[in-house]
Image (cartoon, rainbow, N blue to C red; front, side, top):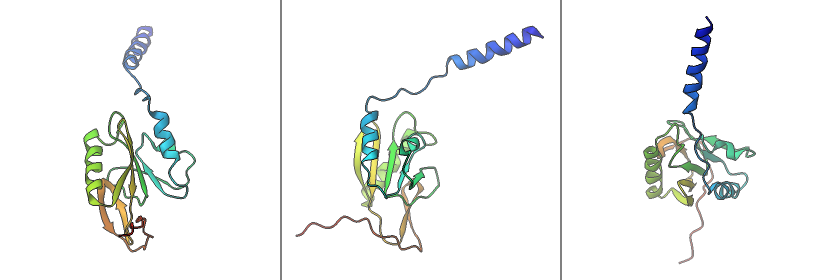
Length: 148
């Protein structure tokens, strides 16, 4: 019986010996500052790896596959810790959003991206970069047009 305990302990130690945490990027402080610079009162959606950084924000959402949100900003990471998405899925999400004209790139550094949405009245953001009409009449986030 003693040898079974020793074998179990050895297996557990060997299993954990290869466990590593992702490296903290040097640009982390710049990313955190960019997130903190987002306007108070605006809803922010973030991937699970960045959600804890939103700590004190009261109006926040989690970006999750097939889950909708109506946030004005999206905080994404396109490399390393992108779960539950693959890095390619995150890149595809960004590539679909930018040409739509409904989103602008507000910040980008070392695989971190903040997108700013320009919401249209009567629509909400839907997971995976699609848009759908809703009954609620949300106020527009469109920027004023420059004079001709």
